[in-house]
Length: 450
Image 1: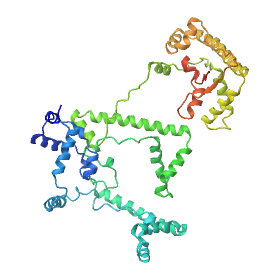
Image 2: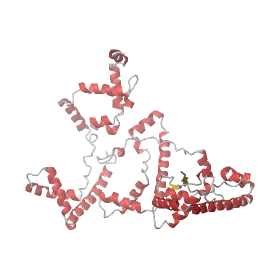
Image 3: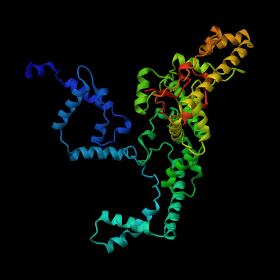
């Protein structure tokens, strides 16, 4: 096919199509992006929303590029006058910072720069502004703590004044525009007032928010490092509490947001989501396999004997994990050490651990049979449904099969780390939940036989 024939296959742009393109581009710009510069706005532009049949997003973008080539990049005086008239008629709407918004307090080093700038500028006449700024920064760092303290005190006074001015400003301007130091996510549309507040990203964010009240005496730029140290000092249970709270807040947010959006039709919902730059949360569906669901239901019943481990190497690992806990606190390092110890054991010693595991399983089998016979028929039926892997031994009177270790001179066995998750995964798998696991997952640690 020739190039001429290819060009004729592409749809032609009519004046009506061009008007549609410009109208679609205009409506697809969010309110918060209407004052952005051209290049930044174009990067964030979504051409998929602009595209309309028979033109693809790429075709629309290419056509806009052709239009821009024919346009003048410098505005005329007439255009500036028209914009000036709009600014004069609506001064506050065209400002990202309210004219009466209080200025933020200057940090201690900025106060030092302002007070000493003219003095150093006269001394160092040949020094550029950038080098002079670097020189002043070094001078401030070399100041003794006593001299730095006076600038810190001035900063604290400015902070107090700033807070008072902000309280006064907030009372006078209830419908104020947010200042430029606010992010785009904080800029509210008309519907944003009715939307539920966004939940924190994770449990650490909740922790940091609660720590703000106890940060007196710390510099603002040191907050994050102090919070990080305090977070690391928390116990695992305390961290999990924050994470659980975060998940609960996210669930509440999803429920409230869906309830609010359901009061509008589909078109209005999409408009609200787009203007506020939020995504509709998906309905939380528990993605669990049938096997996992059965395991979760299969909880240990009252009086039911605990199922021991069926592997000798797992018994050895569990025992050594407890013994070496104080000398090797890190779980993964401890596990690696135990792996080496297991490999150094003789075949007879390994066989002994296997024998102990078999004896424990024989004892467990007898205790399970006795416990099952004392249960009511309803309890037995419930146990049969929830624990099919254990019930089959009771029903058929077949003992659980335990592989007996047979020593061999040619074997080279290695204890394998079968986990790639967090450090606590190893000890958790060994110490907890063994009685609830299926047959194939009883032995979390496996052999490699060559």
